[in-house]
Image (cartoon, rainbow, N blue to C red; front, side, top):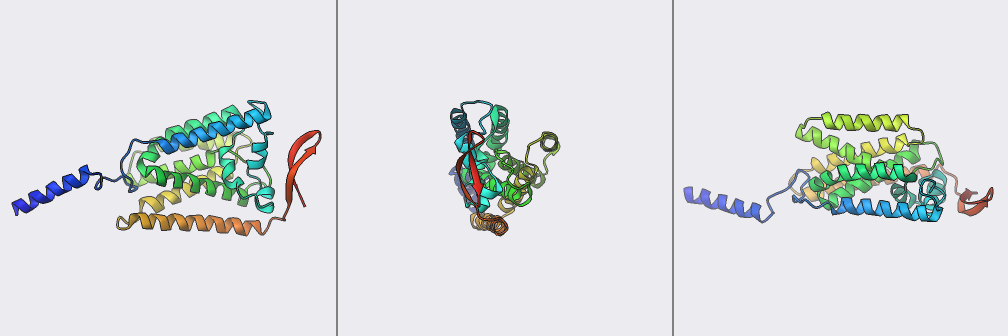
Length: 265
């Protein structure tokens, strides 16, 4: 009996030391890597400076071709079939303060969540949250108001963080302060899309539930099924919304002496 128990403990130590028995609450192997977060940050910054070069302005880069082709707006996205805007808008920013604030938040929140979720699950969380934010904008926001920025996905990370705090019964003070500050910014500064933030927050929380509360047996399969259901539901809402938007043709045209991306029937 003693020998058998000793062998079992030895096997368990070998199992843990091999990395097979050590997992985070999301099912990922513990790692200090933040490659996904750093890559997302770098891509956002590079795209921002490309728009600065196109617009020939650090502060007024909204007229850049990349901005006009990539921001989220109802008519070109749903009426013109430019579905890529659902994701490209999450990598576009208006001015240095916008990009700096979002990239600071991404670096601060993203690193910790990537280490808990692992690279693949973290990227799934980020992009599904972005999809949820864009869906909320297209469903509820003012039609054709240009929306851009990583904040929808970042609010998804905050929604995920809230679920982690609840699951692990952590002290919620830091979370509440973060949410309060972001809520104040969202509702007090003109031009910020409330629906993008709300959609991202809710979607991120739902994704976190699907990932963190999946049964341990066949965990990856259950997590994949949960994420697939969320994505299918969001895409279904977008398809339904598109049936309500008239078809349009979009192209660059000179309006009032300046080149602009115009959509019309």
